[in-house]
View 1 (cartoon, helix red, strand yellow):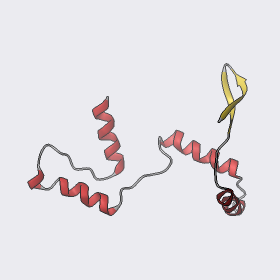
View 2 (cartoon, one colour; view 1 turned 180 degrees about the horizontal axis):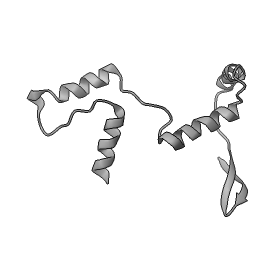
View 3 (tube, one colour; view 1 turned 30 degrees about the vertical axis):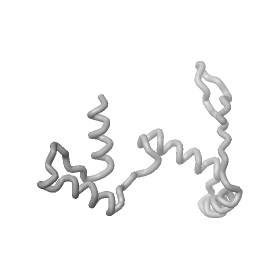
View 4 (cartoon, one colour; view 1 turned 90 degrees about the vertical axis):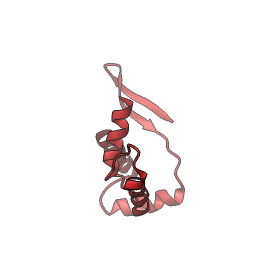
Length: 100
């Protein structure tokens, strides 16, 4: 649930977001974040900023198993107009290009 707070030019300057997280996870996270002087609110805010900046929460990398599967598709005996994809960023670029 997200609540809008403090309106400026018709845009919410801040929002309050209620999230559901295990109490055990919150306590564990608070313990580790406290070492860095970061609150859970700060950590969630940092996480959301990363998504806004990078269009995803963190750099996604396919597993070795996934890469082997992708590469096996691109062997000469499987030629069929497929292109080789070296990493997840390249995959996102190709998908975006096809849908624009």
